[in-house]
Image (cartoon, rainbow, N blue to C red):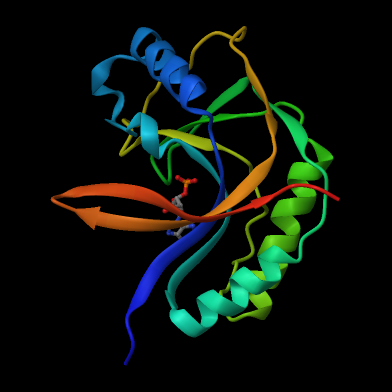
Length: 176
Ligand code: 3AM
């Protein structure tokens, strides 16, 4: 059997915003909130693909490369806690149409290529903490990070020396 990789499509967060989020998180949450996600690992998942062999990866990247849609502005101005998955996240109060369209297309392509997408609706979020405590006091509203999303990426999830690391393998521009 050939080797597989753990893959997902996601939006990158600009490095400067990753740093600002890290700074804000340290001010807003106590350390015991959970396991903090490293700055470089902050991302917004669009479609989780799971363990994928090279043939399926090729099929998925060919389809991704055919996507034609313009970029969009994304604002992170919401936060939440999912106690069941023990995740604390940043999100957006108003998901741009382009974001929903892109995720929907990638998820449909993934499903058709043999990567089941489950039944839960897409909830755009950036995971801030994993293994969160059962009670988390969320920051007061008023925070906001906004940027122009100009591309999306295929990421590989690696587990090295006891740590998870995400690596962008390929990027596609959002242009019509
Ligand atoms: O950090 P977020 O929530 O964006 O939770 C995993 C992470 O998402 C998610 O894929 C992203 C990269 O690892 N993930 C992991 N296993 C998953 C699964 N079986 C999954 N999403 C859906 N189904």
